[in-house]
Length: 143
Image (tube, rainbow, N blue to C red; front, side):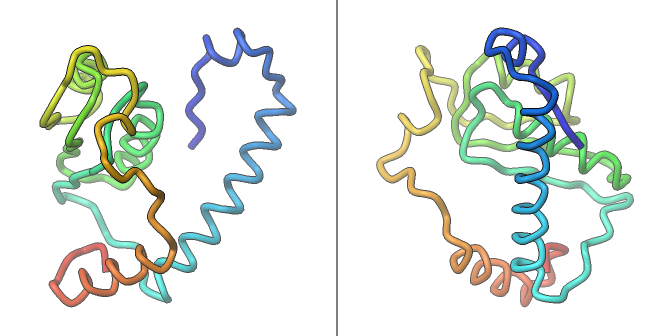
């Protein structure tokens, strides 16, 4: 599913061809990650379940908006968005997108998610695989 911020697209003069090219590249990366992270495991059946979507924070919320839309297509009973930090207005907007929203901290001024972390390094593929492998032994639907 593609979620675009029309204002940003217009303001930056991004063309449909630019969007299509970026979507193709990102789609390939998503397929690579899904294959690497699932390690042959099937996608979890989310029908009727409560799904908690967690991110490092909410600034504009565009990534989480896409995640909520994608998960909703899988038929969960409820979708909960949980973040440790977020812009107050974005957290408030999500009350109309998700069934529940947990924003542990909404500092003012907010600026950016990375400002609220001592270490904001990206999680590596190996770290993700290790965490998923550990969670699969706990009966989590992730594994």
